[in-house]
Length: 134
View 1 (cartoon, helix red, strand yellow):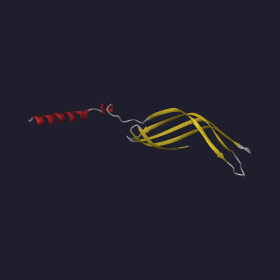
View 2: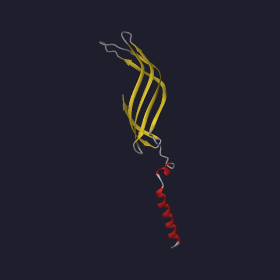
View 3: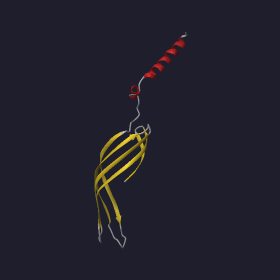
């Protein structure tokens, strides 16, 4: 056998022999980011609005209101393929928004909560997604 043919046969043997390795052996080589799992955090900020309920038959607040917010959020993502991610997220915040009317009524908002579903497309460590909920 010629030296070139023996080298080719030896290289082929290494390639074929490496086929018997398990997926776990290659897991450490992957740099693919996994999106599956629970997460949570805290939020803080400002909230506000301008109220203009000047309907003559039923007057209401016509004022500006705003204040600080503070809350928590939790969620879970499940990566259904290497690119697609589905998830659910909930948050709850304490807020302080007031608006008054000189004639009748007032508006007070003390808390806010949401529950949303999410569908997204993962680009390694980046996730582009749409979300909808109540």
